[in-house]
Length: 193
Image 1 (spheres, rainbow, N blue to C red):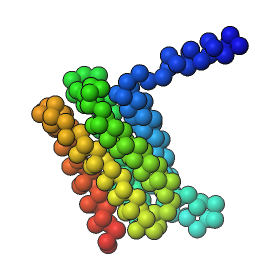
Image 2 (tube, rainbow, N blue to C red; image 1 turned 30 degrees about the vertical axis):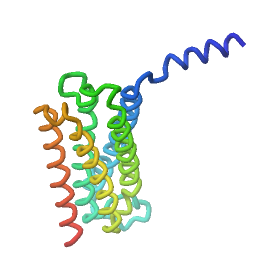
Image 3 (cartoon, rainbow, N blue to C red; image 1 turned 135 degrees about the vertical axis):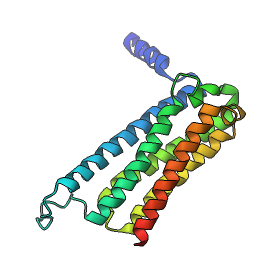
């Protein structure tokens, strides 16, 4: 019984104490999801690029076709921009966007948490749909959901006056937003062809 009590006390110490701590934990998990998806996508791209062209082999079902490879490259750019932005949220310097917020900003923190959870789900969906890129509409739909959720997070972050007025923060958001929109537009153009 005493051991159970000590275990419960140890678990209590590990619990997040503030809303910001909860979001930082979720951001860490989401960044992990994005990094895993990037690794998987990178492996798929490398495998497709190094394939000898003999994709007729029934055991090479996981090699992306040339059109799917082009979409996968655009999705990788979106993943990288998303990961870079999410990682920047947790930076401990003055450019760390979450560090400009405090627990009095609970509604904004909750909105950020919802956005981050949505991004994690969208990245996971896109990574799971990796080998369905032959269905271009599915690829575009998955990328669109990820872009929409990431852009929603940008919008949410810019609602806070200290973030909107911070030149490094607003520049970081603008650059990530521009890169994601450009990559998604290129992806749309490839699907239309």
